[in-house]
Image (cartoon, rainbow, N blue to C red; front, top):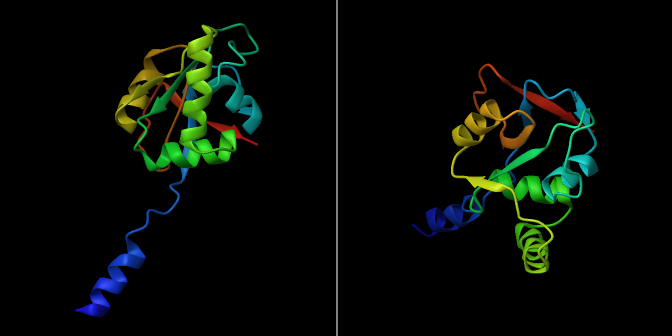
Length: 136
């Protein structure tokens, strides 16, 4: 019994979840740097190179993929990104990306919105109208 409790404590931590960055198929970019992706999500870059407005979409805060995305793309955790957005909102400079509750909702948003960019756990079915963006 004690061994089972000890083992459950070891497996209870959530490992970093792999994710892929996805874009609407009409988006001309095939690859971006992690910094460029971060700039799109932090609204430091508002358009794609062809002038199409960027429409970033986040997963909900409790998503392990969001935590992985925040750490690997922004270089900081969700809390630090939330703090950034509180400052931006308070100063009236920008609003954060919309949030979707599930990977399927993110895929549907990206499919329906030209210029959309999001991320989903690796292995999420994408279907037509959505493709993976290479992040360098």
